[in-house]
Image (cartoon, rainbow, N blue to C red; front, side):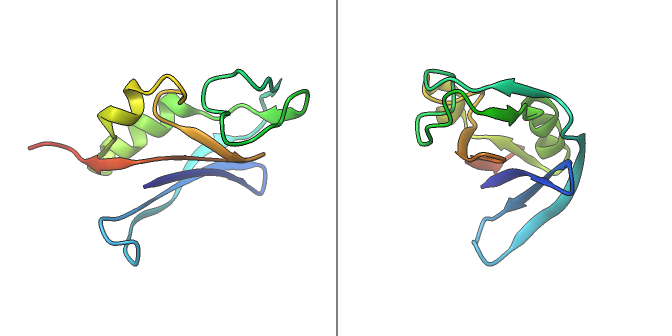
Amino acid sequence: MAELSVWRDRWTMCIVGPDRAVVTESNIDLGPADRHTTAHRDDPGRWLIDVSGDIVPVPPLHEAGQAAEAAGFVVAVAARADSKTDQGWTQVTREMWTAPCQPVAL
């Protein structure tokens, strides 16, 4: 599982797995959380949370995917194919997104 969140005004990501007790990669810095948007309930990835009308930071999902791959993981294919997600990512709080990950196939 990858977790993308804002900490001290910067996007950071950690990848936990394959056992939840094992942090495979932690505190991957993905840059400043300085871009914002007005959220809408029908936006991809926002089916678990209602932040309609709120100003929320724009997550660097493409960069997060690249960082996960560099760490040896990819966002799960089934999650990326799910129309409810945004490139496999789901927003769970105002400043946090998660995505299921799997090891890169050898």
